[in-house]
Image (cartoon, rainbow, N blue to C red; front, top):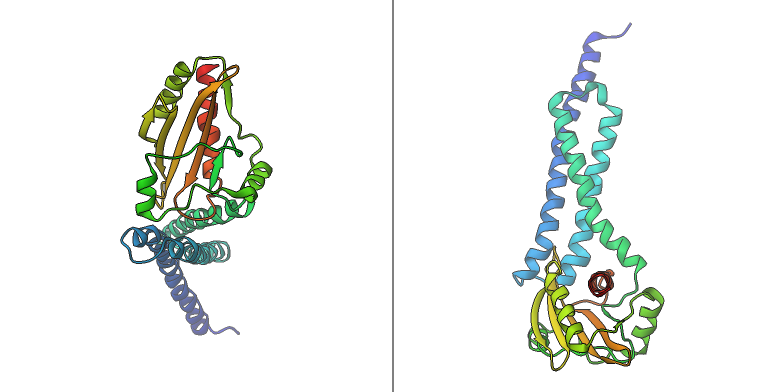
Length: 262
C-alpha cells in the first residue's frame, strides 16, 4: 500500500522545486540582459575595450540566456500540469527574454561567419574615393587606416560583393552631384560632414545602433565620357569585420540614387 504521507511529501518537494525554477530562469534572463547592456556601455565609459564587450560579454550573455531559455522550455513541457498561474507567468517571461537575448549575439556570430573579415567597401577597388573632412575625427579615435586597402582586400570584396559597382549617368556632373547630395541627405541615420562640389566629394558618417560604432562614407562624382560617374566608399573606424554593414549601406544608397536619377 502506498503511504499517503510520503506521497504528500514528494508532491511538496516537487512543488518547492517548481517554485524555485521560475525565479531562477528570470534571474538568468536578467543577468543576460545586464551583460548585453553593459557590453557597449562599459566601452563608452572607458572601462574596457570594445573587443571585450563585443567578443566576450555578448557571447556570455547569449550563453546565460540560452540556459534560461532551455530551463524554461523543459519546465513548461515536463511540469505543465503542476504549474500555477504565477509559475507560468514567470516562465513565459523568462522564455521570451531568453529567446530575444539569444537572438542578438547569435545573429552577430552567424553573420560574422558568412561574411568576409573586411571593413572597407568601395565601388572602385582600383581607385577608391578618398576621405578628407573625417580624417581628423578618425585620427582622434585611433581608427583604421584608410590610405592602404591592399590587393587582398580587393579580392575579398570581389568575391563577396560583386554587385557593388559605380553608377554612370548622362547627367552633367553638377546635376549628378546635387542629386547625389540630396539622396545622401535623405538616408536614415546619415550625418553629412562635408560637401564640395568643386572636388566632387560628399562625406558623411553613420553610427551603429547598439555599440554606436561610427562608419565613414565618401561619395565621389566625376566627369565621365557618358556624362558622370558616381562612386562610393564606406568604411568602419574600428574592427576588422563589419558584419556586412558597409556593403549593405553602399547597396542601399546606390539603389536609392539609381531610382532618383533613373
